[in-house]
Image (cartoon, rainbow, N blue to C red; front, top):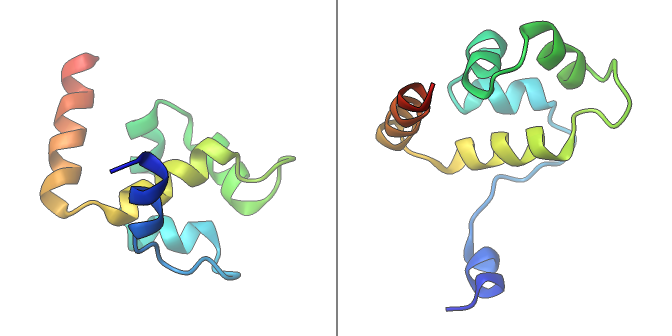
Length: 87
């Protein structure tokens, strides 16, 4: 299956006007935990998610949150363990 076909089959939550902070929390992460996971400061994440920086939040932050929303708890735990092993 081509990449574009598999992307269209994903069932992503509707974005609407739901704040990214809420989406992150629904994915199971606090801003502090998310910041540690991706190697950023909590202040930087808070600024991005609250719209205090230009281009808020950045595309890669949105991408990561959208991906986390799709993962099961077990998949998130495996991802977190793999990231810690890389550190």
